[in-house]
Amino acid sequence: EVGAVELAIKNASDAQIEALTELAEQFKQIARQKKDRPRRIETERQFHGLILEMSGVPLIADMQKLLAALFETSYPTRKSPMLDDDVNERIIWQHFELVSAIQDRDVERARSVMRAHLKYLLMPEREID
Image (cartoon, rainbow, N blue to C red):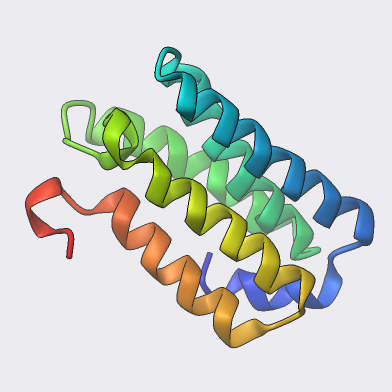
C-alpha cells in the first residue's frame, strides 16, 4: 500500500477522495461507539481497499482481498491494535491525516503516514513504538 499510494494520489478522482473522507468519518463514528469490532474492521478494509482502487490498477486492488483472507486465516489469534478499543483515536487520526495528504497530492507525507499506519495495525502490541 505504501507504493500504491503514489498511484492513488496521481489517479484519484475528487469523488473517490470524498468517499475516502466519508469512510474515515464512518470509522471514527464506529470506533468511538466501542461496540462493533467486526464493523470497524470491515470499514478499515474498505478504507484501504478504496486507496488501492484509486491507484487505477485493478490487480493491486484485487490483491488486497487475497491478503485480507490470508491474514484472517494465518493469524486468527494474533494480537492487533485494531481489536483494542483504546487505540482507535490514533487510527482515526492516521486515517484523516492520510486523507489530507491525498487531498493535498503530497506523496511523501502520504507514504509516511501509510507506513506508520500499517506498522501500527500489523505489529504485535509489544513491538509498537
